[in-house]
Length: 102
Image (cartoon, rainbow, N blue to C red; front, side, top):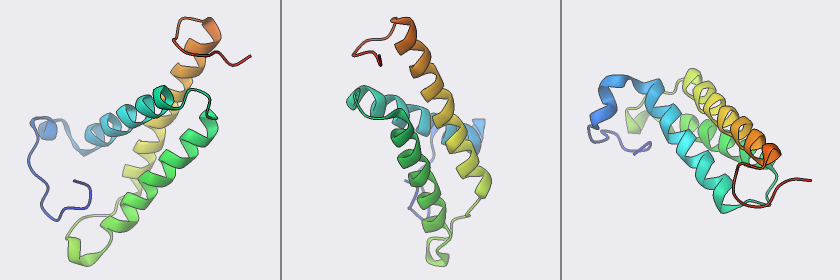
């Protein structure tokens, strides 16, 4: 939906654009951490942050009639960082599932 000129309306649209960005990247980060438990969290964060930046670059294409907003990328990256911090805490306390970093 990030690349559609007129994305469909969502029930959460009234909560604001930044909330939508946060929710999307919280879910993506959680799924990435669960899917690749042995991957470096720093690498997961880097790649997802790059994806957020790439989305903003593509949205700057005039034919898409979308807005490129650097604060959207900042929001994406902040959401990624929060999830990664939670994952680190869960892994260190042993309350999370999957292999722990030793």
